[in-house]
Length: 146
Image (tube, rainbow, N blue to C red):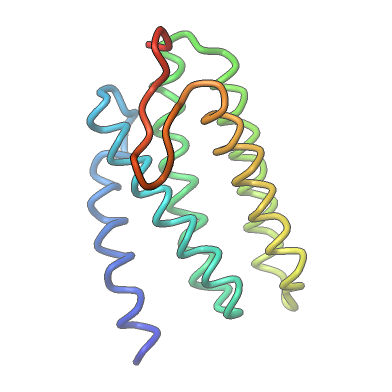
């Protein structure tokens, strides 16, 4: 029962974002909402992996995958090939992580390492190129990016 109660806020966020993420993201407002949902999904995914709730972690991977597919169109429209490449790499990393989490016996350390690599090489790479700020103050695009 506790697991279900813990999933309710995540599902509500995912459903709200899915309305945006079902197609591509086109506005900065949509982009911001999806990025905030990604931060929450990534945190929930890491927490689920840490507590060996691999089915819950896979739900968060699915949310991240859907969101990244939606923001890919945003960067294609902006003609930012390096951002599109980062997104594609991130999608590949999410696929590998999902495969790890779907194994009959999940190696928790491997899953945690894959999740860390996803965040560092995808989220971190894009933020380094295009964003400024931090989680407390908020992120914004660097001047001249858009």
